Amino acid sequence: MDNIFQFFNQGWVGSLIGIIGILVAIITFKASKTAKRLVYQSETLKIIGKDSITLDEIEITYKKKQVPRVIKTTITIWNSGKETINGSDIVEDDKLRIELNEDKEIISLNLIQNTRTVNKFNAILDKNNNNKAILTFDYLDPNDGIILEILHTDSKWQPKLKGSIKGLPKGCIDWSNSSAKISYKNEKNPYILAMLETSYKDDKIFTIASFFLGSMLISFGFFYKEIESFTKEFPIIDNAGRICIIMIGIIQVIYSIINLKLMKKPPKKLNLNTIYKDKNDKEKNIKIS
Image (cartoon, rainbow, N blue to C red; front, side, top):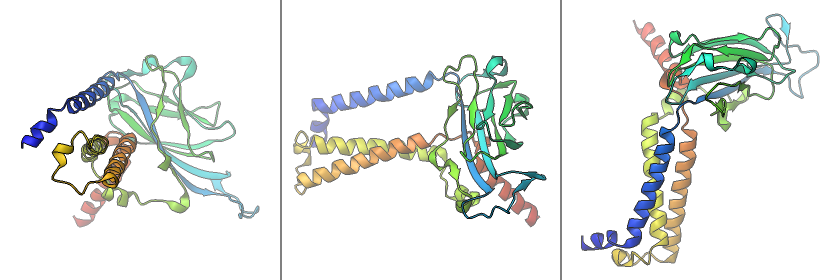
């Protein structure tokens, strides 16, 4: 017990705790200052399309119209900030829109989920441009949003959400990750993903704990001599052991940072895995009854 008190009485320990506290305060303050933020995530699945071995005689049609390919993109849009975004703040000369490359086409647009109907979120195809869909809404409170299902012909996979909104100088922020592009040959079962997925809250707690554990291990490895009196009971820790401890700590911290970056998840009502799971559960209940 005396060794523990002696350890915490060392000046560098207090400095380290102070630095960590300052970093946490800065991060918390920055997060609390996020007033308005419109973000989106997209997942894309290639349904059908020609490749290098496809015969020229083979044609792909959608609703009796010939197309080079059919790509399905599910795009989730929501207000991840802390203040209401009003639809009247959309700049008329730069409307909020989903946009493909100029030579591509949106062939179908379907709203499959919304948080609240009173938001009056609407998406319509641009009559003058087949590669654009115009988005409008009355207002979006924090965590309000929609899920759109788009069928299109863009081989670049990812449609972009563009437009200008007053009070949002950064525009619409893309929170999609590298796994958003899903080839039709590697389609994943959403029910399996839903079963394997941990809750956002548990994942966040685990990641933060992992970050602090990694930071402690790195500090332990670098300041081993300063805490030598505290570690006399562990004589087996040599230079190689210190290096191992530092490496484990670095891995923990890197994992935590990457995981926190990937934990940009939409609200529960707009989480596709949750929607698929609830739908599957309802179907099971109907069959049982």
